[in-house]
Amino acid sequence: MDFAENTGLLLKALRFSADKHRNQRRKDNAQSPYINHPIEVVQLLWEVGGVRDNDILLAAILHDTIEDTETRSEDIREVFGEVVMALVMEVTDDKSLPKAERKRLQIETAPHKSHGAKLIKLADKSCNVRNLVTTPPKDWSMERRQEYLLWTEKVVAGLRGTNPALEEYYDQEITSGKMLLGIE
Image (cartoon, rainbow, N blue to C red; front, side, top):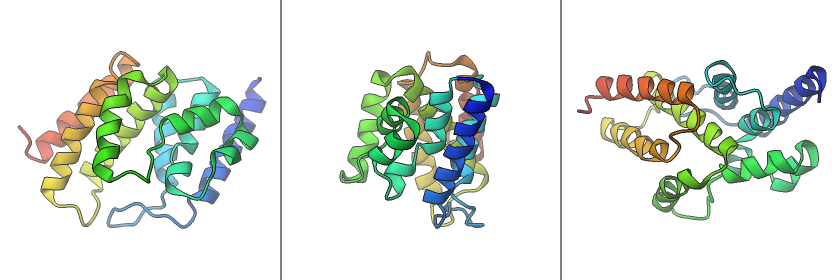
């Protein structure tokens, strides 16, 4: 696939994700548009991680559509293909499970994910850590924020060895976050 085709698919994925998340807001005080998050994840993969695999970039843009909207895996497969759909499914939590179980499964399954899914998860957790520190959810207590940071460390431990630049970025964010939130 050439540059123009890849660019066209990336733009299509941005539009698809923006449409699916159109009524969603982040949990920060400003209630930022949710689409900012997938854009941030794909930008981190591109700029810091040096990721150039179009399927991974497409899946990063779409990574929360199944989990957080009415999107079906078939919708993604139809428009973006089997590989992208498989990556999105691999990073999607099963919302029918209790939250504690979903969090446990993220830790347990992280080491067994494909390389592409690990990249997306690593970028996603990095963005979440940065946002938790700089623009935290308005109703999250300090304790909940601290617990989230510590939990991400357990997930990321299973993603190590995937991309040194992304891992270093995460390490900087988690170190800064722990300092700011008073975690020893």
